[in-house]
Length: 175
Image 1: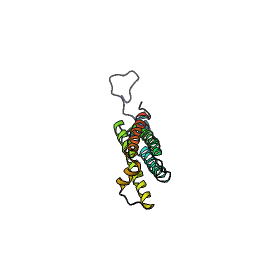
Image 2 (image 1 turned 45 degrees about the vertical axis):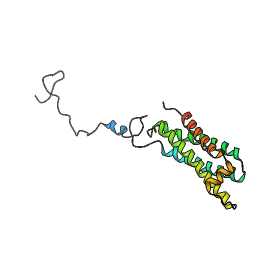
Image 3 (image 1 turned 120 degrees about the vertical axis):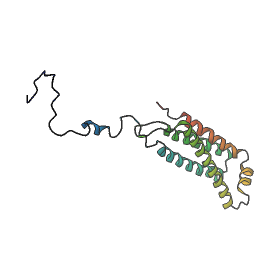
Image 4 (image 1 turned 120 degrees about the horizontal axis):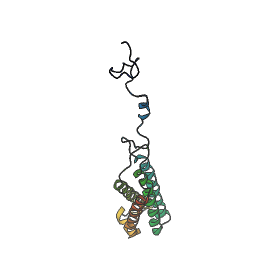
């Protein structure tokens, strides 16, 4: 019996002719991961973090312009609020999964947004003091800032932190 007949159940199937592949031909399409599944090795944080950092730097410069050149104390609250909200809204994108990266936990996104906003306010306050020193000021940083801006000094930090928290919370939602 050299070959098997159709319907012959008593024999084991004949060995396939030719070489066998190590993997199925369709395995090459699965190399990039499943469609719609985030890549576990890459975080979604770096891109939004860079953009939020640029917004924080621009906000610090705006604080120096408004508080130093225009000498507006109420303007500091406005700039701090807009800057904090923008930082929060931009960094909130890190909490949304996409096809290429895993999302950052919401709590981490909130803390990063608040830290960036407070850091920008602190940097802006140092810039205000340096601007005053350049114009001939002699007070130390805290003495100058408290004497010049009074309760607006902690006020703009509080406003920036609250609006950053709001922006990060109100940003895009995970699905």
